[in-house]
Image (cartoon, each protein chain N blue to C red):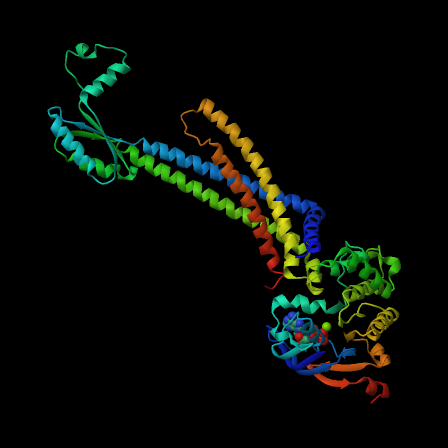
Length: 294
Length: 228
Ligand SMILES: Nc1ncnc2c1ncn2[C@@H]1O[C@H](COP(=O)(O)OP(=O)(O)O)[C@@H](O)[C@H]1O
Ligand SMILES: [Mg+2]
């Protein structure tokens, strides 16, 4: 396309933004609000997923062994467990190790004498499953192995935790989907208003032989600029809010595992900016299509 | 230049606006389309600038069949024709100059060409003194002159007018028709649908009478003059 046309299209796109200043502001605000919601949703989802993963990864199976087993029998049980499906890792804590650890934590050196020379700790095998959903099945299989005294994995609590984290994930996805949809709807509505207010102009352009792309481009530029400005406002808002929230959580609610990496935030911001531009463009394309028979 | 061969137009709602129309208009002719309201005049005109597509038959302009024209080829067609209407279709927030220049800007002409052509054509229609006025500051006749200027600024071979004097009083209407006649004398083919029988009678031009979607009479200039 010739330079004249490019300049005309750019100028028209911007002039119409200025001419319909309230409509443009409304569109920009809509984009900003939508993207704030979208960005927050992504951040919420990422954190939800991290929290869920952290909780899940803390689910382990503790297997306590019979006191009378010899080293060979313990190794055999260990191997049998290793061969079960869905096992991530198997770690043996011998009764000596357990006693030693406990003694360390008590800051004493004479625990065994204090206990009258008898080590009360059993040998313990700690199992981590590849998927927390497999824990229950693994536990019931391990229970049947002879030489296993008892199996603990936080029965009941795990099921509830899994249900909760699953629920959190779905909520996150639903929130993102709902707001992305609402955003698209709102922008396309405000651009459509804009196009309608310029119906006559488009009609005349077509009448005097302007090409379809010539009619369409100013609106696309307009949508793009609206989307971009809206996205920048949203990025600033989300950036400030999240930084503030992070500081608060890290200083006073340190046990909550939050996502604070720079790369993650950068990625969210890029998604928001691209999302804004895409929504603006898409909304204008959809809105002008009615006037152009492709 | 313009040829309609056995053209019928049936609208999606079933209205039969044109039935088996044959019409030939040579380059440089001035043709009035007359007939009662609902006769099919506007429909015929819409077929010419490809706002509507004929249901049957051929609509040829410079030997291009508009029925077969791709949407992407419509701009090229319209750059070679000017169209004016009863309601002027001017942009209220643009000046006279901008309204006319608009037609050149949107087809990618450069600034110098736009300015020169716009001022020339505004001079032709007698609006040199109103270049910076807004449409609301003009009389109906002057507004229609702006539309004529906009239709002509790209120097099209054909000028199509659908009841261009419908909103104007007799004197002003005559001004517009005289202007169209002048343009026709420079070589532009003019097709004008109208109700203004008084004007048609006095102009001594070819008259095509449409009724019920059919051409029921086609009088050449000479026949009109002789009152045949
Ligand atoms: N867009 C349309 N949809 C359906 N019917 C139409 C449409 N335009 C015109 N018609 C019908 O076609 C016939 C011819 O209309 P028109 O071409 O506007 O006549 P004229 O311009 O001579 O008054 C009328 O019966 C009218 O109701
Ligand atoms: Mg009509």
